[in-house]
Length: 233
Image 1 (spheres, rainbow, N blue to C red):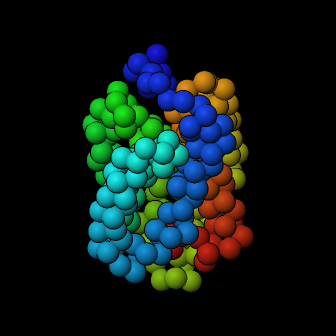
Image 2 (spheres, helix red, strand yellow; image 1 turned 90 degrees about the vertical axis):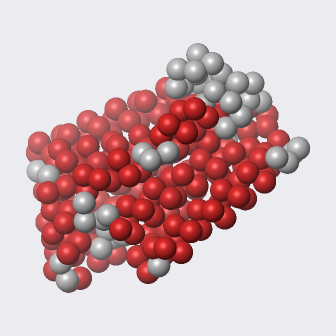
């Protein structure tokens, strides 16, 4: 059985690479932080439309005989789903944090269906990214950050930075900090389990979730010491 409860396909470790596939997954998780966020803020429609280019490139690459190109194409198809979900939320629904996860999960049926075929890595990447998003939102809700979400986004820039910093300082209170550390520890343990599985899809999931955790830590640090640089505002 595989990471997601479906029969494993014959994915050659040599083709996927012990480090190549996880590194690619990590880059695709981190990329939206630096590219998608400012693009969506300036031109959400064109950012969302770019999904078609990502999907087409992924499908074309997946048809190549080269194992490396084919694997990269499959991974790009999974990334296109995460990209579109992020564009839809941050472009048009960013003031409604409770809609974040449902919108990001729009391709969930396709990802689950893809686990049993040639698009297994695409589904694994999308599901791992979605799981990271779900954990992030859950911790934000538990620590009270979610309650300040709309206030931060609607405030003028200088006031938004102050509100964001207050929200981050709230995370350092004893109970919220305990919840944050506990969630991070559980995710790290789960990532270690995934990483040691022989199926490359598990290592890809570990990389995506671990990168999400690292990005969350970066956002928290930015909110504490340089909130004006945070991607949230």
